[in-house]
Length: 239
Image 1: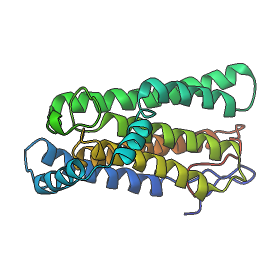
Image 2: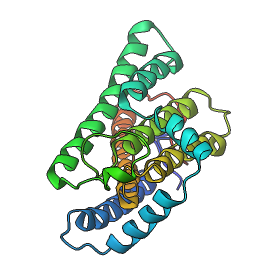
Image 3: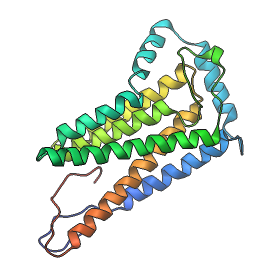
Image 4: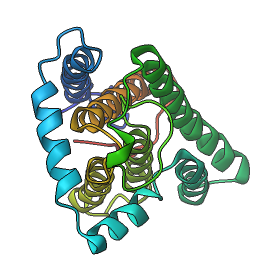
């Protein structure tokens, strides 16, 4: 979708694509939420079948790999990482770096807290502890590790494509998506989450980050329309 700006002003990208992504993510998340909350458990058979398969067909080597990978996804690790990357990739003086880093970190932490509030509201139990390959705590839907990983991967990818205009966007986003999906797989494979828990997290983060992108683009458009004020021509999440 092409965007228009006043003559002499840099283009500000439109909001249609992220709006569609946010709406689609929200629809999927709500559908999974009603199943997880037992309001309409349409996905119960799917959850049980996949969980039984993962609990009975594990190998020692793959379990060790999954346990190692999943340990990188806690917000205790990903949140500081996002802050450091934001500082490192934001051009300009230290104050500008810290301002951007704080805003990005707040976006992530608000997502983490919102996910936690939903989890407490739904109060879905995890799979039986006898099927776990690693220790786990808290409730099941949506998956905290998957949400933390997807939020961090999405925000870091966003920072990279904004900082390096010539970076291959498809590769940056492929790596981010691959990491989030890998964490989602580990949570199911290790037996600590139902499949719809991790799918719900991925849908939640898609909605969260897409909505944030919509707000960012609206803000840049309004700033670009103000007389005497030009917005720097910056790379964005999507074209």
